Amino acid sequence: MGYDPQALGARCDQCILAVLREGQPVPPETRNAEAALVAEAPGEQEVRHGRPLVGPAGMKLDHALRDNGMGRNDFDLFHALACRPPRNTMKLVRSKLAAENRERDTRGWPRLPDPVDACRPRLLRELAHVRPGRPHTRVVTTGKEAYRALVPPPLDEDGKRAKHPSIVKLNGTLYHGPLVADDGKAPSDWQVQLVPTVHPSYVLHKPSFTMPFYRALDRARRWWTGQLGWKEPEVTLNPPLSALTSWVAWARSQPVLYYDTETTNLEPTWADLKTIQIGTG
Ligand code: SF4
Image (tube, rainbow, N blue to C red; front, top):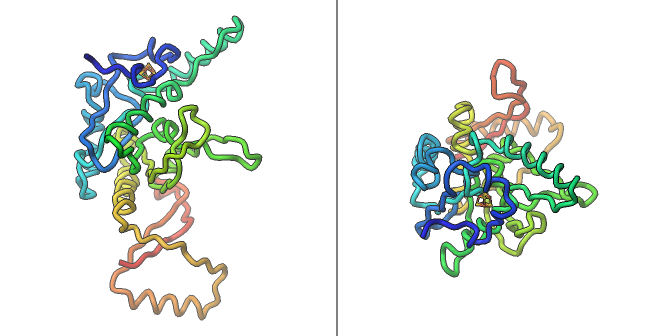
């Protein structure tokens, strides 16, 4: 029998993608791996082959994983949305959903949920049950829909649920906390170590994001294997000259120094320098 997301908890009877989708839903690809990778939604190649992350985006992902000492076999692969949105974009889907819900409001009918919310129960169930007795606790999400499908929205100053930051801002950050519950709002009691990054197809369109994408995957690997070695930095505002002089002496005595910079723009000719980070080997 074919893949049936509805039997796994997807609310397809209320999901606008059940009407708009291109091709059949794509099942996860599982191999009892130590970590899970959750992508946004299948594209043309994924629907054609009935597998997640194949085609150019899959090749980009494979390359990035290989470059960081990992491989596709280290991950069980899932989609936040099991169905392919038309033209691979949720923009059109959400504008049709808004129009449909306006119409439903005038008729007094219940509104349809966002497809990410409709498909979340299926995704959570797959993540929980793919390894019997060992729900996934190490997760990489690629793309904003995948992050949104799994992480509870942050609270604003008034204690209300706010929007998630953009995926470019979240890229490579470390989320150690609960997965969201089926309702997409409340945190569940399922703790994960999750690293968000962009979808590999974003990197194909924007090659300047290749390094941040690779680095996010590297951070995930190092975090999970205890090699990140992160210590909260000590902050010294307006350090006196003597402190700077002794810091330079210390830096010169180090065998290896790494540096990274943070700028206001990825285009070097337009960018202002915000910070320089320096680390030892
Ligand atoms: S995206 Fe998920 S909930 Fe929506 S139709 Fe596809 S399988 Fe069903």
